[in-house]
Image (cartoon, rainbow, N blue to C red; front, top):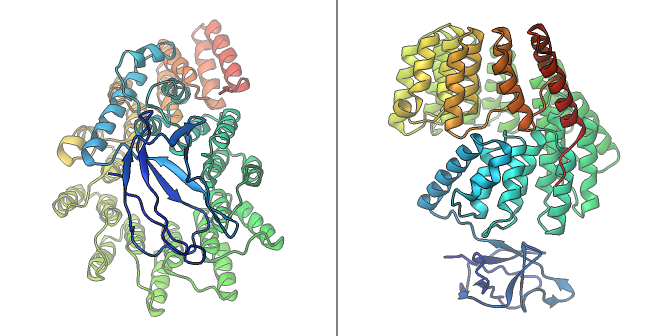
Length: 553
């Protein structure tokens, strides 16, 4: 059932408006009409909810936009009323969501085990019933699959039941950004603009991908382009730009951008802006600049909140200065600011990493006594604290307690334990726990979990075990990322397994994943040393083509 809410603007509307949901005669999804412009007050609950089937006034325009006959606009003192019409999600119940996830996993398995040339025929033969939610879920899971993501999208948009949505485009932009296909991304932006699907969040995604590609100039230019597409930047967008650049450990550049935009009166920094910059200084371990920024914030009359205190405490803890963090904690309590679970988590993590287990456990007990509901990250911090002092039995005891309380564990919980087992060179124990994650602990390995296992086996030159993990990951439909290809290829090079070097490097190129220059140099040297000059030249030409010929949408 589609829920339709009545929105009333008290300043402009004398009587309630009734909006309806229809199912189109053409068989489109149920659609909801939402009043979205100049809402002065959202006050009463819906006074009328009505669903009329198969009204011909609802039609699809340009593949995505819908127009409701007679409802497109009203004139109340020259105030235009605009409507946004979106398909109702096809994932409304737990059962339907589970089916979507199962089907997405099946599709990912098909794509993970097919050459690029066979993708369309394999998908055609799979009997897939396409829906917007399914396409979005598959694209999300394929975020590390390079060109395969684009191939799947190109296939899906030709299928019955496909509808263009912002979410689908956003997942595609995220995936293409990881392989630096920015020209294609801007083609997608133009398509989104034409279909009325472009959002400010779209630019947030693009900016983040540019920053992660170390293209700060292009990131700032993308922010400036928002206005060219009819989108006005708000304070949250300025903060997002500064946050993205700051989190990439370019906080000095973020501070310069903030200062310049403030000087030109484009925006006025708020508490969140200052907190973002404090976090940035903490990330680069520049605590002197953090203290200066904090004092400047106080001098401007901005009062820190629990988030600000949490950022500062976390920065000190990660810098191995837990005693300073505890001083800030005491200052916060003196100012009647109640600590959040995140703050307790930071202190437990910090003290645990300094092998101050008793103090870490003290703050864990304080967090429970404080009345804060126990949270998964806090339990994970306790698990990590036990691991730092090699008390693995206590760590697993805590995981059992988590299960009893219905709080996790999740993949991150086990990754913490695996990380410490690997560091302690307990290879067999680490692999055994990796293998039993799903059955024993109820959590499936994630991309990062597989990456840890590959690194572990390649480091100890047990490449056959690494291949076994790789194949297991493929069977799960989880596409490998660039770092995982690099790990495997470096392992094969070290053991002079030339056929495997060529096979994995070729697969990497076929997926549109650009290898780092250092990796290609190692592959080339290994092939030349093995008398395979022809293959070294072949890969060099393929890599040049990949670098110089962006995809076109």
